[in-house]
Structures are given as structure tokens and as C-alpha cells.
Length: 266
Image (cartoon, rainbow, N blue to C red; front, side, top):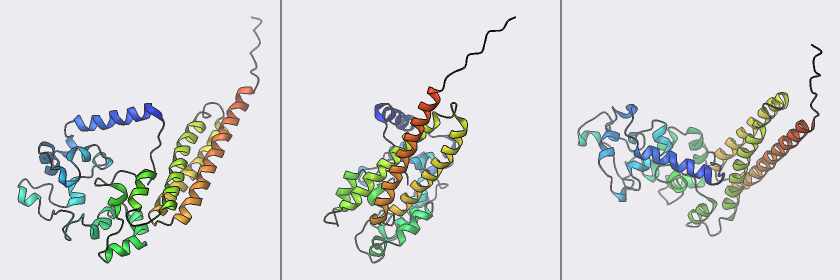
């Protein structure tokens, strides 16, 4: 579960443009046989459902080919309303795939590593005992494609926890570390045409940092903040060090004297 870097207004404008393009674009050929998409594109869903067709259309799930039926059930090949909605129920229905007691396994069908991490937590045990506790929805929202900000997390965790300071701190540092990795990759890539040998070694080290980030993100789903926080701090520091090394390497290359080719006698 990586956190998208924030890199100023230009990146934000690009994201907005991408979202708008998905909202206004017609259904692609990939969804022609999916009658969930075909029907709900024309029929506006009530706000009470928690999300709209447009929310889905702008999501990474839609871009990845994940239709309504993956989360809600039903038959996307059926044309009749009753048959198409067979097995579909509201989140309040214990038989529904999006009921709190079943939501983790529904999401886990596509995200097994995250499910394995979550299943080991007190939250998962509380949900299994039909108690109120954090689920995938708590952090990721109805479309399960959003990431909470540290302020969001503070508010959500505080519903049950008096002072979720450690969780907020861990997310803040993890977000900073992932933002740093974005900047580090740009700094490393700038050396590709300048010092190819150094670049190859640096890219290998960068990929290891990326893998560390992915592992920390998985560990986040265990809510073991006493491990996530120091590991995120270390990742942030290593990313900063590699970025600084790239900057110094660029200075070294630029300071090397250039040898002009002597004029020919002919």
C-alpha cells in the first residue's frame, strides 16, 4: 500500500485532469459485456449508498478492470434486474460481501497479503466477534482506493482510541518516506546520462528501498506501530542519503574538466 507523493500544484492539476477524463469518458469496450457498468452508467445511484458510479469510474479499480460484482456480488452478465442483483445486499446485511464481518475477505480475494496481515490483528478478532472495529473501509473508504492523511487517521482512530498519537506519527513519517523516494528516484535518474556506472548501482539500491516501503506498508495492516514508526524513519533517512549522494555525484561529474578535441592540421 504505497502513499502517492505530493509534488506541488502541477502534479495536483495533472491528477485532477486524469480524474476528469475518467468521469467524462464513455464506457470503454472492456465493459461492453458488463451490465452492471452499462446500467449504472445511465442510472444515478442514491447518495445513501456511500459512493456513486462516478466514484468507481475514477478509481484505480475501474482502471484495473475490477467491476461492481467483485465487491458487491451479483451477475454482471445478466440483463434482468432481479437476476443481476441476486446476492447483492447492503452493508448492514450479514450475508452481504461488504458487511463488516465479510469485508476483509472480500478485499482479500485480490489483496491476500494485506488480508493475512490484517487477520492477525485485534481489530480482525473484534470484527469476528461481531464487535465494532476497524475494517478496510475505515482507512480506505467505500471505493477502497483512498489513503487517509495523518489528520484523517487521527480522527478515525480516536473514535475508539483515546490518543492514537503513535499511529498518526507512523503514517506521517511513512508518507514523508514515500515522498522522499519519489524525489530520490528523480535525483538518481538525472545521473543516467552522466554517470551510467554509478546510476546502475544506485538504481539497484533504490529498488531495495522500494521493496522496504512495500513491506512497511504491509506491516501497517498489522497496526504494529511500534515497528512501523522506526522502520519508516529509517527508510526516510536512507532515501535522503541516496538523494544526497546523487546530488554530490552530479557535482563531481560537472566539475570534471572537459578536454576539447585539438584542431586538425588538414
